[in-house]
Each structure stands twice: as structure tokens, then as C-alpha cells.
Image (cartoon, rainbow, N blue to C red):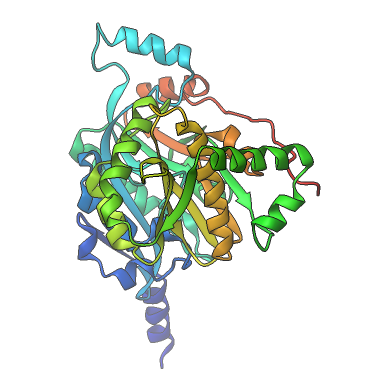
Length: 390
């Protein structure tokens, strides 16, 4: 083979091939998932498809797949929804903005192109394969995000919920004009334990007493816990209690619909489970949906019957059972999400940072937003609980 032919083949192998579709089903599942870890369920084709088919928040989608030499090296889902920019601010700022909206209904409420899905589970969905130079890949994804923002009349682009490890790659967005801001931290529980007994024995005495008190109180109130692998008949019950949680939620970017619960169950039949805490007679007081990989389980969603005096006790029991469920499946970690920090940290979970990357297409608005970033996106630090003896 001539040197020129070798050069042409090498250039072709190095060239990025970009595929852009509005419907995730227009990309084969095998191509989309080719570079993902098997445990990376929330970036998977079937999870993205569940969000899109359910029409959560009536989001508009563009999916970007980047290949090199025919091999998938990166994927990203872009969505456009309307959000309130004061979402993550403190209660004083949120109350002030809420009051001012009586005069200016559109204040700080804008269409935003998200580098991510219209669901808030503390996970991003930008994935770049190991060993790839992220710079050219991020340039192409940003170019499509900019086109989508222009088409949708959205001035703001936000890549959301990056972990510290992902931020090492996503920091390449800073050279493209983005700034980084804090999102709500997520909770993660490491599980170097064989089962709940060994976990409980490893706890300091005060935390162990709290755990056992929750179990005893549930027994005293005749509350029982169950985990369901088939839970189609419980979808309505779960959604009713999820709605009650959302009515009380301090932070709310989106509100999931019942179609999402159905699509999620259908997509992950062998990997999704439902935990319920019930009173004698079958009345469900609290419940949770989990996703299970081989080494990582995720506590996705909860529902609570607040009107019942035992509703919050049942919720504490549900959270405890998410840990037991993860251990039964041999999980190394349990991802517990961005709410109820106290309850989860008393079981040994630690908070881990999450980051946003934002860019406004109008330079003046961008400068203003960046200047207000510490107010609108305050960094939250929570004192860790020293739950385990070592």
C-alpha cells in the first residue's frame, strides 16, 4: 500500500462521524450503547427512549451520536424545556422571584436547551469513551446544542448533573464559553458489606440504634415491607404517592407523568423493582422505584402518604429497604439521589458534588447570569455523618 493510501485510511479512521436524530428510535440500540458500561443504565438507549416516549414535560429532543472509524465514541441527548432559573436558589431568593412574577410572569422563566434529559436523578447523559480527545467531540455537541437553541428560541444552554469525574472531561466546555456552577449534591452509599446484618454491625452504636428503632416502630405499627419485580398493578398507587411528594418538593425542575412510570417499568422489567411499605390490609404508605445494574443500584423515585400518621416512618423504612435491596443484588454502591439528605446520610451515605455548565447566546445575559451564579446556584456543603466505626 502506498504512503498516500495509508495516510487516507488513517485520516478516515480519525475523522469524527456525527449522526443527529430527533427520535432516539432512529438510532439502533446497539450503536447507542456500544461505549457504555453495562451499569450505566440512565445513559442507555432504553432509558432515553422511556423519557421520550412518555413525553415528560413535552420536551423536544435531539440525540447526537459521534463515531470514529465506525465505532461509537460519544453520545449526548439534548432536550428543550421551560425552566425557572431560581430553581436551585435559597428560599429567600425563590420567594422574592415568586412575588415579582405577579408583575412579570416570565421573570427568570426561560426555554433552555439541556445537555441532558428532562428528569432529575442526579445523573448526566453526556458520555465520551475513554481514551478519546474530548475537545473536538465537545465542539460538535456544542454546535448542535447552539443550533437547537436557535431553532427553539432558547437563549440558554445547560449541560447538567456532571459528577466530579465527568467534570474533568466536561471542563472542556469552559473553552467554548461556558461557566461552571454548583448543582444539588447527590448521595452515594458505598457497600463493602455482605448483607444488612454486617452493615448494621459495622455502624456506630447511635446510628445502629436509630436503624433498629425504625424497624421496631414499623413492627409495632404492623407495617410490612415488600419488594416487587412485577408491579404493573401498583403503577396507579405509586403515581398517586409520587404526586404527593412533588406537591411538597422544595426543588422541582420537572414533574413526571404516569406514562414515564409505565415506560420505565416496561423498559427495565428485569432491572427495575418497586419497594412498598404497607399497613395490614394492603394500604401502601410509602414506596420507591429502584434500578439495578450488576455493581450499582439506584434509588430513583419515592412516594409517601403524608396524610397518614405513619407516612414518614414508612418512608424511613423504604429508604432502609433500598439499601437491603442493593446488598441482595451484590451492588458495590447505591446511588440515592438529591433529596432527603439527613435520612440517607444517617445510613452512611456521603454527598458527592454535581455540576452544571451554562452558556447564554447573548453576551450581556451570559455575563449577568455568570455574575449571579453564586446566588442562583449556591454550593451546598453538608456535614458528613460518621456512621461506621471504620
